[in-house]
Length: 368
Image (cartoon, rainbow, N blue to C red; front, top):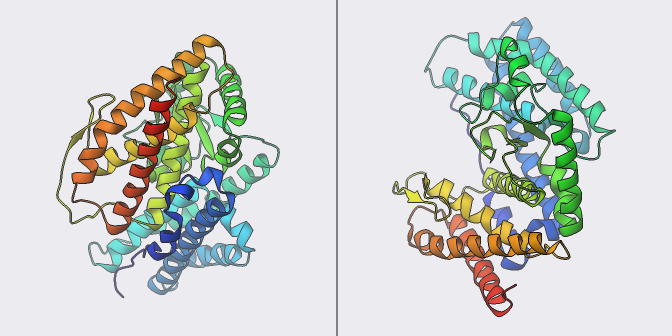
């Protein structure tokens, strides 16, 4: 047995990366194609993992139980499977099981304990997902939670955020606004996103499956590819417009996570480099710098749609857009000079460059 690998579906992505179709929110068929391709790759990874586990663990009751559950998922329709394999906790479980299985295949360990423990937890995971799917049928937006989240998600969020032990929850619940109040605020912000950029709002819940309200978090908003589908919000915004921006910001991160999942953009063998974000002076590697660039182009495309608001709010949107555009223009030369992109990464950067230049020309001609 050799090491398992996850092969990207890079060629299928090439036709998507064009300036006029880059922003999938406005092109529903391409957005659906992206989701379908990601789902297919995730399911293929699950099948490879299943085959290796069944072959490796002979005469194991945990293997037999996992096999029965896995076969039940395989028997579902493609649409039903998409919902299962796309669940954030399911993806985290696959990542952990993939790592544990590869460690055994590469003889990095002879101890099957970690993998066995994951298999033993698989039935409970499926029960939790099934319960979430039942709840989601009655919801019009992603659920908003404070502490009531899947334990696998809680396991994956550090160092972004470390969920407290049970004894600390009561005290932490006294910090920040109540969950009910924040839910009202987030719901209003999502309604305003629907009015401002309907296509983005229509696809928001397809990428964001859970909003965690964490007022004690050391961030404004946060997400990471290791828990794709989940966004963390600390509610440190100063206005509803700021909340809109945080939600669109994290949605754009989720979109790029999906693109990168099937189309790596950074060359692992490329030179290491560190960059300072023009908007905050925080340091990032090339991957983080590009992520920020991608997301901020999206924010400009959102803010330019902010119309017919109160005068002060309209002015805030225009000033924020100008600030972001200025930073994007400063960041672009750094990215163009980098030798760390894959061919597809260079293609995506070229698309973003065209988009930025068009935005700059448009807003130079119509400054507010």
